[in-house]
Image (spheres, one colour):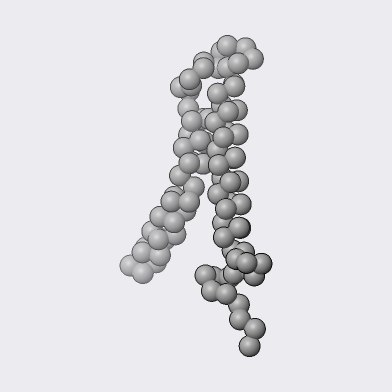
Length: 85
């Protein structure tokens, strides 16, 4: 039972962090599009837009987390400032 609970916790955390990326992959793989793929040139435009938008959002979240780790020029690890004792 303990292993099942820990696997559930890992999957829950993974899905919480990556739900947008998972939805983008499903959209790219699905046969339904906003612009049909059989239109030459612009058919893949919505797929490319969804992919680029998702990657941009993920990058912005990553940069925000990196900036939160630095407070007043000090690196913060695991939510606590490193002290110089």
